[in-house]
Amino acid sequence: MGAPVGVLGAESSGSWAVVPVRREATATRVTADGDFAEFARTALPGLLRYGHALTGNPHDAADLVQSVLEKIGSRWRGRHAFCDEPLAYVRRSMANAHVSQWRRTRRENLVADLPDHAVEQFDRLDNEPLWQALRGLPPRQRAVIVLRYYEGLSEIEIAETLGVTKGTVKSQASKALTTLRSCLRGR
Image 1 (spheres, rainbow, N blue to C red):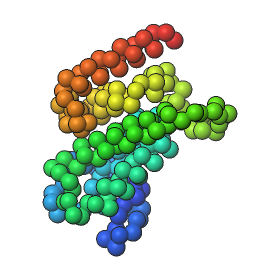
Image 2: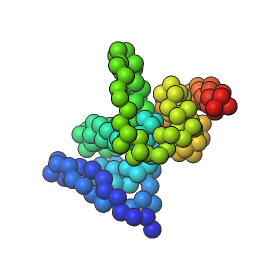
Image 3: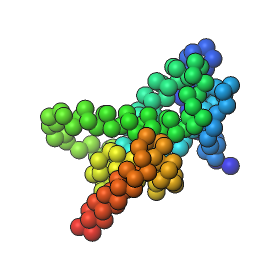
Image 4: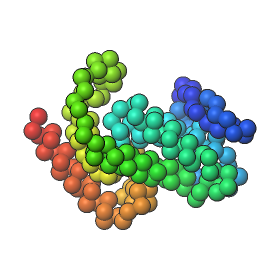
């Protein structure tokens, strides 16, 4: 049995509270009478892992998950979980939000920051060659690779999650794997 984890969830009063969850819980389908707090409770660990793989660090992942769940949570009651697959809807929203953020920051003129050694020591994965190469991929390719190999989704599930065709998933995966191979061989 997994250790309890805290999740930020909506209460019936409309306020936010930390709700304990268990790691082994999974979220797939939610019935029309399902509530947002239950969905968030079961989906959060997987969404944080997905967000970490998309963004490359746990802090940005938590921000991404929180912003997406906040937007979806505020509209949850009227739509009864938006669709038959709310987890796919949230993943797609996360991928779209990440791509939008990447596009906004790409246009900015960035000045090199001094490295923060405390943050570098916090997450050992940042120094792994695979994670470094993964962060170098365009956001859409990174999302396809993360969903396929980290989350274990099929090409059809990825296409539905990202709102693209199966052929697009295949081509993005192929391009991403080629880029990853060349990056990792060059090390």
